[in-house]
Length: 448
Ligand SMILES: Nc1ncnc2c1ncn2[C@@H]1O[C@H](COP(=O)(O)OP(=O)(O)OP(=O)(O)O)[C@@H](O)[C@H]1O
Image 1: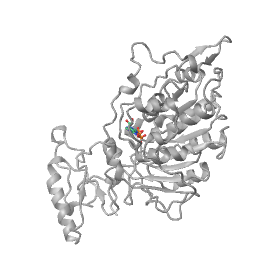
Image 2 (image 1 turned 135 degrees about the horizontal axis):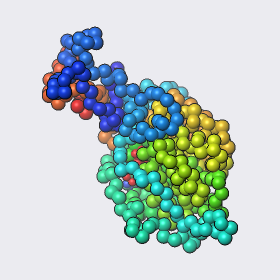
Image 3 (image 1 turned 180 degrees about the vertical axis):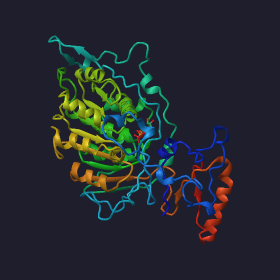
Image 4 (image 1 turned 180 degrees about the horizontal axis):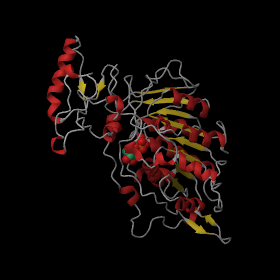
């Protein structure tokens, strides 16, 4: 089994390695390619690039990890067996046979430009008691004058060709899985959200949205394996926003030192949290729902002020949220919706203790009295454990990735200099032939 599997984020995050570290700056373009006959020589003799060394970043817990951002961490190696070992998954908890070799991708990669982290005061006005109160019907324009009203919606999408999603495999398992939809019109998301979907120029749901939204709207817990860029954000935001609008529309008095969010979205990094925050603000435009983001590496005072103005949907990284909880500035007792995005990456980054503290040891309602959506690019054993601990009678959903390989194609990454690509490729082809596997398609990607 090749050992140097990696996902797209790892590719972008890992600097090309120059094994000739002792070379002078002038000679750093020297070849780092190691011919087969020189490989596995002791260190010093030759310095082959150690593909095993692109690990998860390891190391400490807490906020400092959040500051690293999406590019510097979580470069886990994905093993053969694909992105999700879902085939044997059951909705009742741990799948009967193991996940795909514990393979995992580091999510990330679609950089939507990040977010400003600013929080708009969506229709907040000052009540007579000096506290903030909410008036949905009389929302002032939430956007500053200098920013056109639809600017939030005018940002370019990523250019993903969602038509390519049509053929990707989707698997669901669990009891009474609500049927998937093929248009947004088939789902009752409410008029305002539908209008915002139109503003976002989303013409039809992506596969994860097609399945996840009806499942979540039906009130079911969901464990979804889907890659970054598959449209997960809308998949968990739409049901949350629709659910809040349906069951507890904003309108209650706000203010006070302690915030009581109705929905919590946990994500591993400040960048991702910012992106989710930006998207969630678009989706909840003119709903009266206030979305607040809290992440490490930014002044906590600003976040505290934002929280004091009221929050329905809180997007947070685990370390900063624990800090806010310990300061007594947030109560999770009103949480009705919990979404964990890129859960495998959060675990890779060492956030499991914080996540368990948030979900299990504070005042959050238990599974069954809240709705939980767990999103992960992979489904290794630790995520299975998390799913069985956090979710109740859940539906398992696994969505393939655009252009994904089948199990028959191995992808292996070798880091070589441009000048060495051809000879490296020839070597690989010869090696394949020698092993009698020449008929197998060799897919050499991302050669540096
Ligand atoms: N149904 C849709 N139609 C058109 N564009 C969409 C749709 N759903 C999502 N998008 C856009 O596709 C891009 C990727 O979606 P999104 O950010 O939700 O993916 P993701 O899986 O959450 O990725 P990440 O993990 O990077 O946040 C975004 O620019 C988003 O606005």
